Amino acid sequence: MSSGRVEVSGRGAARRMRYVEGPLLPPGPGEARVRVRYAGVAYGDVMRRKGVLAPPFDFTPGYDVTGEIDEVGEATPLMAGQRVAVLMPLTGFGGYAQHVVVPASACVPIPDGVHAREALGLGLNAITALQVLTRVARVPEGGNVLVHGAAGGVGCAVLDIASQRGLRVYGTASAGKHHVVRERGGEPIDYRAVDFVSAVREQTGGRGVDVVIDGIGGEHLKKSAQALAPGGTLVALGVSGDVERGLGGVVGGLRHVLGAALRPGIRVRMYGITASPGCGPAACRADWAELMCALAAGKLRTPLIGAERALSRAEQAHALLEGGSITGKVVLKA
View 1 (cartoon, one colour):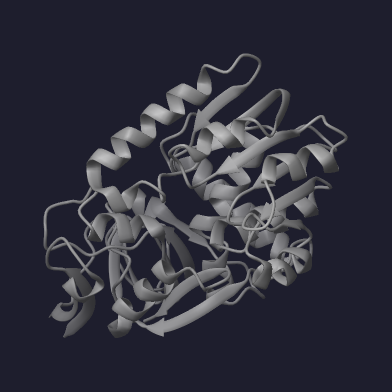
View 2 (cartoon, one colour; view 1 turned 180 degrees about the vertical axis):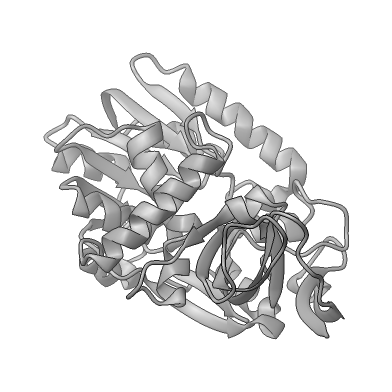
């Protein structure tokens, strides 16, 4: 039998991705083979496709998947048919595939009542949001947060989780996406029409916010730091604003992180999935399980899926993500 997957054949545009067929591999001892139903599309996938922090070509991208186990190896405490979610950085990426073979320990059971598509919506983006709020920034009870790109995948997850926890959230977004920010419990700021630092200061009585979540990077980090209250925390999620300039842009972006950290009275933290202190593999699995249980119990909004494409049309999903018009998470149906 064969199984399909997406491969990136070389650095460059989305057309460098191709759908290929290969042998269906069996699981080894302690492993499970998962029939993937949904795979998440992340900006980190775009970065790797463009050659930033990329593994050797040809490689299969993909951070998070959901599906069901179709075969287990020896000494595996799981059963065929069990629905699971898997965070692929724990296994070397490779989520854009019909099947993945992973360590059984990487599998997180999906609770009854939660659809595989919804479970995926609570994957990479929502784990990131939860960990930034609770493990990295540790937003105080009743605190306030500013998140940039509030209508995107991570932004929507921050809005959902923060509002669920009683936090006040301000979110930058273009005017056409303000309805999404409001629907998810946030207060929108049109970054194209107003200075977001001035807007935050005005809405907080001049104090600023406890936490700023910035996934843009570069010079933007310095401005984000200006929106913080004394003792506040700036969390740098990534370098989306630097990736277009290649590896040199990424390195330059890291210099801006260090520059922001020199401002007296604030903390600066860099976040990376599975890599930040207190956010390792076990924490990621526990946080994903917590999010899915909260959804099953009706304590968390259904995650926003902004676009879905077939696995064989991964290049379309990347184009949508890069175009900036999509709200919420982009997924592939396998």
